[in-house]
Length: 60
Image (spheres, rainbow, N blue to C red):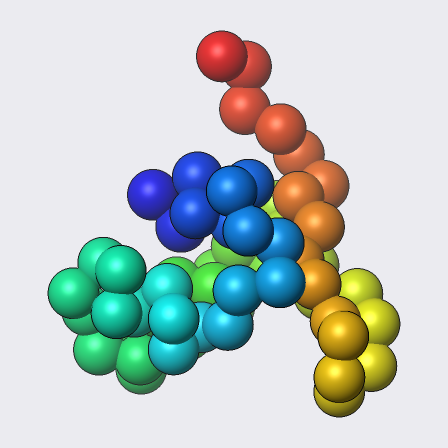
């Protein structure tokens, strides 16, 4: 679900994802860390204006 949200808005923050999924920010951050470690997503850019990139697209 996190990947779907990132596809819709690559500039979204972890806190905003948590609100959409009705999860804690910490829980979302853990899931994002796993996705980053697996090389599925990465954050591009500096502190301001950064965005998420999906490195591995699912086969839909």
